[in-house]
Image (tube, rainbow, N blue to C red; front, side, top):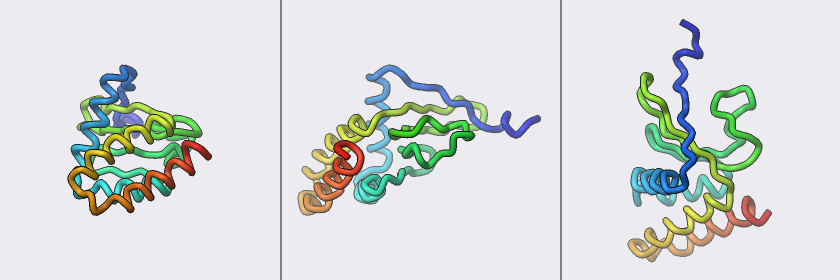
Length: 132
């Protein structure tokens, strides 16, 4: 058996509705307890995940790696068991920013005292990745 046989294969999710559901799952999974940690990672261009679900930036992979997806964007990755096909889709920075903004609204309804930090993280991300 070759080492490559042990690496999970990735199912590419292309349907927008499925991608939206997966992003909702991601934010549910990290929950309110890790939301600020995730935003603070994202503003620096660093991915964030818990257990088997992550959102990772393009430069966290090398071109020779199976999960490499190009020189820009963010990938949703959900790793399954070794015998199941893992899930992946790639979004551009604007799409990812839209998810962050949408989820931030709900978070701020529950935690209005974090408004300054959330808005700062979103602003830094937008400037670095969407506008810049």
